Image (cartoon, rainbow, N blue to C red; front, side):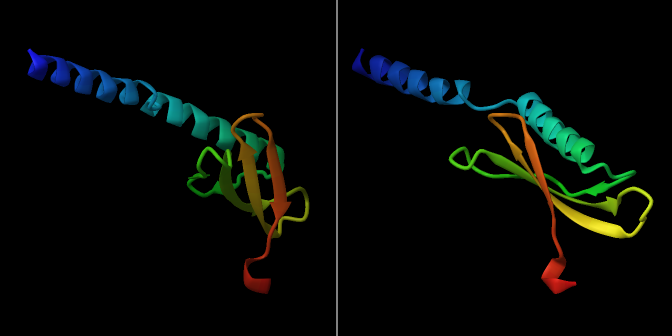
Length: 100
């Protein structure tokens, strides 16, 4: 009887941990929102986007690197986008790789 109770308790603890894990659909939705917000805010014609980099929950951000041209200039620019998971807002800044 004690074995049955111990097994049941263990299964209950293990199953509650899995209940809080995000599903693949939830991750895909988050990454689609991050990419969409970053690309939309970049004002680039047809940007190349990196795979999103997801920081842990204490940071709450997703980073996306974008490369493309903006407006009539047509010279390539590099942008770093930080998407806030909680607010759904994206912040974008231009960056230069190692001074180039």
